[in-house]
Length: 357
Ligand SMILES: [Fe+2]
Figure (cartoon, rainbow, N blue to C red):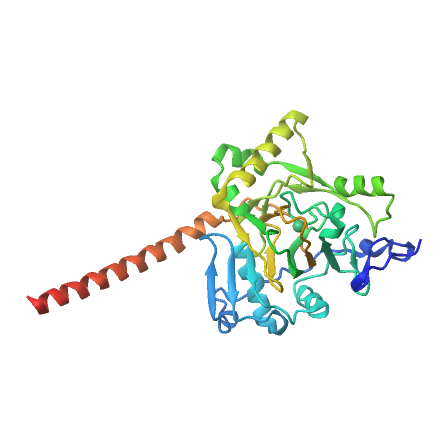
């Protein structure tokens, strides 16, 4: 069957020549950002404004053109994204498909999605177009392609077309989800693995008769995983792709998965929300965050372009640290700064009263 080519050269239906594209997916052989300067001086030399959306997740950086990063800056950015979970950029009009792909390749091999439509000339560039909404999974919390043996480390999403209203994306902090669990539950989850499946895509292919671009995988991953860049623990199950917890009964598996999903959905303090503008870019670490689109924008349409970087095979190291532990030092520094500012204000006020006495 010949592919149907839509506007902007999007392949809507796979033909035979595409059927092995996703089979070449592989895992990262190095951890992008792991050896970056902890202070990220090269990256922040260009930053003109930093807006933290919440203390522990989500930052918007101004002054950066993603198409013009040096090697050192892109390494530091990878580390910064792993720490902040998701980082936002505005006005990235010059990040065309070629530069988008080049940025992703700096951090690892690019994933070819087995089902989502892709750009004809760049199979690593997938197109999230609301006109093809039956192929979108963006109205439920998930971590990108967690069904793969080496799931996504980073996803880089740019919106070329945005709705006149609505269509935000929300991310949730999986480090904090882990940190807030009680010790007995942490201990239980740290010994478990879960099966992640591409069932949702299998159903779509059965319903539509569409061929895929490659294998629809199932994979077993630890329920708690270590982020290799930060060394922090996070929960790694999600409602879209995690089929079951292994080694427990079906009802226990359902209880655990429902409980964790409930926390992701309801705990507002874990979440940040981005209101997209045309040419906004979000880059997130799938190993330690979940995300969902907000399906509120119909009848408007939107069209996003995503490049997905394959990471390492997920692992759990019991000796890993936590964001909570690291946060203690950050919180202390914030308190010390506030105290110093308050004291300076007091000293200035007492100087004025001494002068006027
Ligand atoms: Fe996604």
